[in-house]
Image (cartoon, rainbow, N blue to C red; front, side, top):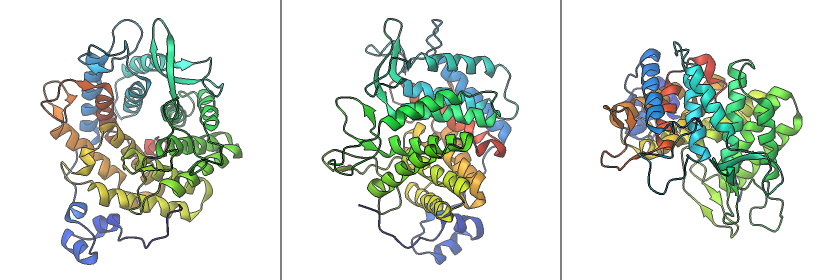
Length: 409
């Protein structure tokens, strides 16, 4: 059902920007101390860059397969039943971390070699033969015998397409493959559910599989964001039109009463009401972009409403709070979109402050100081590539200068 209109809550951004904690509490009964607390002073860009370099170096030294393929392992240390190489999704996030770090002030020129390696690794997942809809895309796995193989996940493909566009925009076309992004977008469009008999008809499926019947926020909003970006680059109205279909479907069926997005709707009509942080980051980024390309203030207001809900629900300034309990790669995606939204909408979106605080807590509280590896739990046995990639990416985002933010995915 469409989400009913609701009165907008007191802006947490306004409380942080203009009031002390006591004044903010007096001004709005629903404002929690955690939301109103000022964030600790974060490191400057140089220190943030050095932290990101250490996190990326730790990823490279612990996860690189080292066999000439440029690929990475799924875990460190490698587990007995692991595939030969990581799945595509964590590889794409490791690539994003290196790519974004390269744009930090003072980033070493040696990163260019690592970026080229990540690019080559990414293309080992490209499955030119095509999947269930007949269109090529990035498969979930690769190995020397089979090459690219496995299921197609639409969200996995969207992240790659968006990074290609991000690189194109940041470097003014020197990097980033827009043609590949267009191929990815064609694949995503082919994943639209066109059966009107389904509950919540429409939406992009999560994956091309015989075991999945989900249509997700994470398969629709990243598709929308890629479409808006491609509209910005090409001027082709059809890209924007399909993006708006994805936005409308997601808002109608997966927007919760608290202003955040649920995860997915299934073919039996049931809804997975989990509220992951990346399912809030991309929608707020989408709305900021739509405001930029259309000038419609409704999109600005929607973005700011999601930002308020994020600050309230995840208690973003609280060490060990709900934000820190989320998957670290999901938080990196949230932070990237907050930075992008701040670049478009200004200080109403505290993207830099949230990103810097999140990155600093990860570095000081969730890192093994001897290895620079991410450690949520000191007793945990080993580490997933996706977690180290998300940690490294968050550190890289905290090191980026303001002119880069507008182009982030």
